[in-house]
Image (tube, rainbow, N blue to C red; front, side):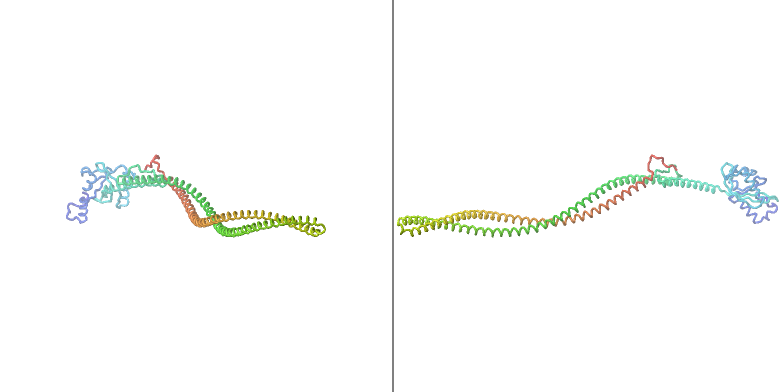
Length: 459
């Protein structure tokens, strides 16, 4: 061993503690130790043999280049890189540490962390080498590298998928399998996107239904608003008309009361006229009786005048017979005859006047009787008219009261209709807003691609 070559066998008891410690470390350390002489392995410890996977016979005397691949992982040529490292060691005479990739005797990779330094053996500089096994570290690095690559793959896959989603592509899916430990995440992502896509499809369908329905409702509310406005206008006119009819009915009620009073007054006047006519008829009856009596008297006078005229004629005859003595009596008889004739004429005139008066009285009685009948008819009709007017007055009062109630109800209906019109207007505005929001929602939904027929996103 190279440590033993440094001591003199004749003076073994003079070994220093440092030499003993160095020898113990060389023999028992888990790191591989060896030194080179003329570029070949001159001596090594057991850990070195374990690292390269050979025996002392196989290792001692081998060139160190036998343990190196042609190129290092960083692309450098192993021989050239080794010469450069040895040159720096000889130049600066300071220990150098570096990572290196060796090959075991069975051809497997042996990553190590090497420390090289100069030692003096029998007055000559030799290169001592210490190898720390980095297989586990390399394996961990490889594992970490693989893990980093897996993470980068997952990150890149998600980045592209999320970028597609950001543009509205919900048909995206991660089709390329992930590393085992991330595969469940891929499946969960695809399931989540599928769920979002289905939800968005339902939202799309529902938004279309809402848009169509809101459009129909908008048309209906517009029509309802128009009809409500027309109804409100018509109702307002009806209220005005009913108010006018109510006022007219009040006037009619007042007029019928006046007519009722007038009919009552007319009936009283007719009754008074009927009494007066009855009295007039009685007076005419008495006048008729008196006329009859006067006519009788005139007839008596006529008879007396006729007898007087006969007597005067007889007296004149007798006076003529008496001659001169009877002349005066003849004159008297003539005068008496003349007066009798005049009395007869006047009686005749009076009789004619009385006859005419009697005829006029009879006509007057007839007219008065006719008038009485007319007044009785008028009284009866006035009574009927009074009853009708009273009925009309009662009905008009009831109608006026009913119209007042109708007017109040119509005013309330008008108020309710106005409120309904306002509510319909608000509803129309809300429906139009809903239609706009539904259209906006549809536009937002259309931003997303959910069509399964389009190519799925491949990570």
